Length: 87
Image (cartoon, rainbow, N blue to C red; front, side, top):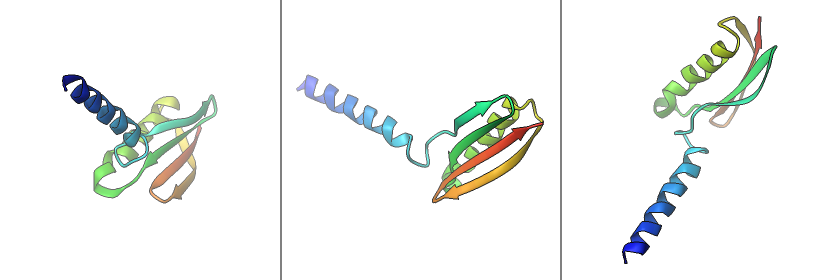
């Protein structure tokens, strides 16, 4: 019985990790980066993901040493893709 509870708990934890990657709880991620620019994707789902845009902008800012221009912003459902060009 103890083994069954442990296996069920581990399955739940593993499932939550994969769920996080595709929900409002997902962290912003770098899609591509090179010397001249960066692309960052994040989920914008209102109140629950308010920090995601700030985190995404911080990723861009760090990569470009605080000097960049957003060249493209694509929204598909709740997912936003930002492309930035470093100055």
